[in-house]
Image (cartoon, rainbow, N blue to C red; front, side, top):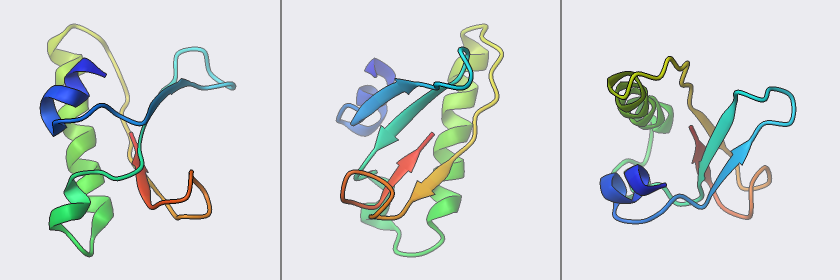
Length: 84
């Protein structure tokens, strides 16, 4: 979450390990900063953030597959958010 805090000025809401895959982690942000500037095409902003995270992982020598998902209010903790 240090990288997230550096990039977006605040920590992610949570970092969770997948139950199904031991090598899969999810970063949750219930109020992504990109939502402040974009009202539509949110998945494009989420994909952009995923690209940044993928680049950081690659630069650090970690092989990773990074994907983005937007969550509706009823899927998360009460707000629209992003999962990377």
